[in-house]
Image 1 (cartoon, rainbow, N blue to C red):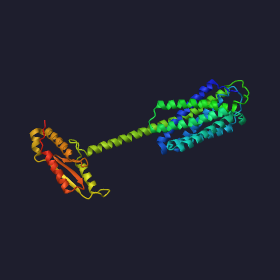
Image 2 (cartoon, rainbow, N blue to C red):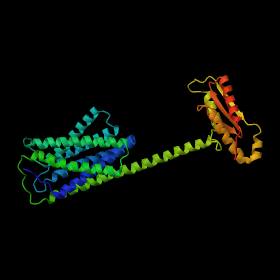
Image 3 (spheres, rainbow, N blue to C red):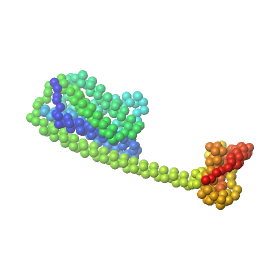
Image 4 (tube, helix red, strand yellow):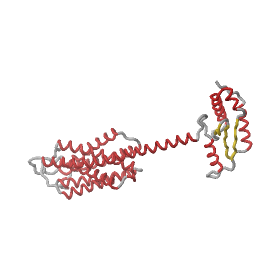
Length: 373
C-alpha cells in the first residue's frame, strides 16, 4: 500500500523544513563567532528553537500523510521525540563550532547525528501511528538511512566550508532550501518504511483537525525560530560593529604612532623614534648586542642653501640627500633625522673599521653634485 501526502501540509512541511535549516546555519555561525560570549540563556533558546524546529519538521511531515485517517496521538512518545530533537540540536551546536579535524571525527559525528535524527523521527512516528516492526520495508529503510547519512555529511561539509570562507546570504538560503526539500523527501521515505506493508488506518470524515494541528505547530515553532534568529542576528551585528570599531581604533593608533615617529618632510624616522630605538639597542631583550656604533651627520653651512634657493629648495635638498644616504646604508640600518640638517643612524655590534668604511662611502656619494630645479 502507499500513503499519499496532503498537498497543503506538504507545502507547509517544506516551509518549516527550510526555515529550520536556515535557522540551523545562522545559529551555528552565531555560536562559532561568539563562542564563550554566548550566555546560557541564549544557548538554551537556540537549543529549544532548533530542537522544536527538528521536532515540528518530523511531526508535520508525519501529519502530511495522516490528513485522511484517524489516529490517537501518544503524547509521552511525542515528548520523547521533542527531547531527542533538543539533544540533537545541543550536539550539533557543540561540535560544529569546534570543527571536525579528521576523517575519523567526521564518521563519528555523522553516525551520532544520524542516530539522533532517526531516534527523534521514530519516536515522533510512534507517537502518531501504530508502528509495527514486522511491517518494515527493507528498501525504504535503507533509502531513508542513506538519506540521513548523506544529509548529515553534506550539512557538516557546508558548515565547515562556511567557516573557512565568507558565505553570502544567497548561498546560505540556497543551502537551507535544498536541505529543506531533502528533509521533506526524507519524511515520505521514513513514513513509508513502516506502512508500505501494512493496512491503511481507518479513514476519517475530514482532515480539518489534522491540518489545524499542523498549522498550530508550525506557527508556534516559527515564533521560536524567529526569536532565536533575531537574537543571533542582533548580537552578531553588534559583535561585528564592535569588532569594526576596535579595528578602527587600532588603525588610528597605528597611524598616530606612525605620525609621531616619522619626519614629515623626508619620510624617515624622527628623533623620538631614534631615541626609543637607541634605548632598545642599549638594553636588548636577548642580550646579543655587545656594542652600538652611532654616526651623526651634519651639513656645514646649510643656512646658505636656504638663503640661495629658498626654504622650498632647501627642503628639496634634504629629500635628495636622504635618498643618497639610504642608497649607501644597508637596509638593516635605518636612517633618522634629528632636526634641521642633522641625521643619525646606529649600527649594533659594528666594528670601527666597518663604520669608517661606511662613512667614507657616504662622503664619496655626497661629493656628487645635487641639482635642484
